[in-house]
Length: 93
Image (tube, rainbow, N blue to C red; front, side):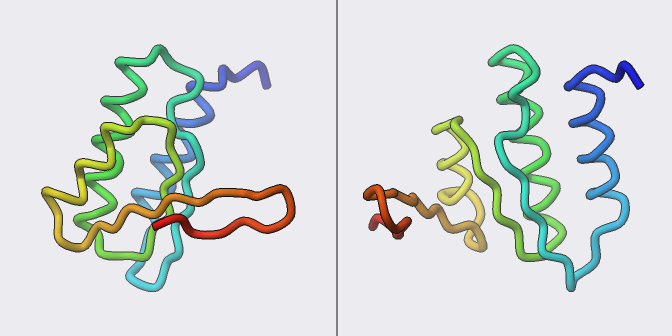
């Protein structure tokens, strides 16, 4: 297919945003890894805001710490930090 990683990511996100329902469980892991940092952060922020407005259960894994501030803007956002002690992954509060 010779599709770039960026194109595949954007195609997948487009599909999610187009076909979600209130019953959807949306899981996105590290969106923007195939782009430069500033563009990836902007894309991830925009996608998060769109998903927040859709009110479906979403798990969004990211390395962009700035996205944590979305919880200060939107009351329906909760940040969770997971840690792995080598055996079991657990929530860190």
